[in-house]
Amino acid sequence: MNTRREDAYCPYSHFSVGAALVDETGHVHIGCNVENSAYPEGTCAEAGAIASMIASGARRIRRIVVAGGHDEIETCTPCGGCRQKIAEFGDDETVIVLVDGDGETTEFSVDELLPLGFRLEE
Amino acid sequence: MTGYEDDELIDAALAVRQNAYCPFSKFSVGAALIDEKGEIHVGCNVENSSYPEGSCAEANAIGAMIASGGKRIRRIVVAGGRERLETCTPCGGCRQRIAEFSDGDTIISIIGGGGYANKFSVQDLLPLCFRLEQ
Image (cartoon, rainbow over all chains, first blue to last red; front, side):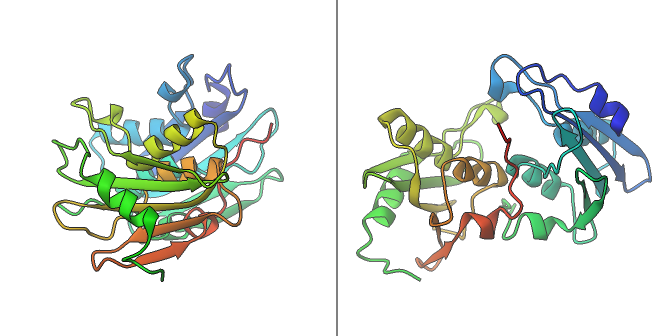
């Protein structure tokens, strides 16, 4: 995951993020943030990892780890948009792992980070 | 809970919802917020055939606030559903957008299918919010 973070394209924020997830088949998918001069067109690390998972044919996130910071790792929680994206492919057993500045990890459920999450009932 | 019938902000959210452009999801959303100056700004969802290019009601209400010179959200009301109102919580992206212009006193009201409004803080809906320290 730190390798992915080193690949981040973030010339505007200088805030690099890496994400790595394990899908329901046990495969690992990774992503980093990819910024754009039209700022809202940039994509987050979590979105990149999820896109990689979906493109591979997998559909569920078992565990996702997020780490980011300017130079050193800082506490970097997923933004609201990424929580929504994780929720789309997560379930009650999905674990979101955050890495803080001391390298300590904390685990959360999707519901803990996105209480009363929006869902479009089909 | 808040009074439903006589709440100007709720009325504004319900009214702007009627203008939503949502031919793809058929899920119309209205948002109305009051800023630090007491001015009301409204927005509805505006979808696009390239789905991710669509914008949410809350984002557009915030855009109107910022464009008018407003800076902080005192209270924001969100109302949505297909035909009838359903419980419609802000998506994660909108929670992040609301957080950018909120403080500990900001109230998020979600209009339920029964026409009542729940009151939440930003912290309630987006715990451990991501913030970029400058």
